[in-house]
Length: 124
Picture 1 (tube, helix red, strand yellow):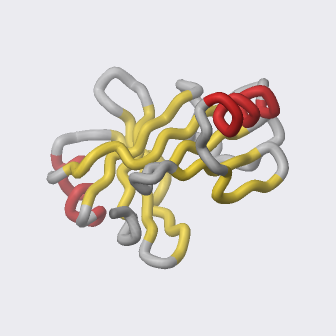
Picture 2: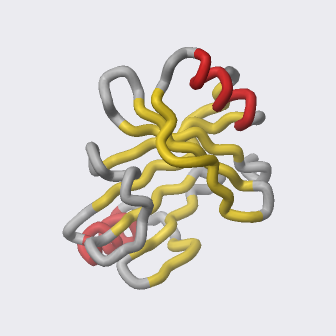
């Protein structure tokens, strides 16, 4: 598997408004997309930070163990999923699509923490 980097970090928080204000005001990252209790911040590199407040709709497995989840950017998600499967990694749920060629797959690392693979054809 060839991982190009970490392209996404998701954070589940009970302090949504404070976290949103921190990342826009202090860190200076613009909000690329927002809905109630959820915001996507996009860095100039194309990497994303998503903040999930208590009322946000997020996949239940995503934050079941940890409140911070990182994604590993890959070119070929199907091949990467197969490599995880062959290595005995626990895949969580099914490969999902955000549309426009964006796919993700959650998995459990050997220590039980949840990560995800992501294929994002629009990431620079």
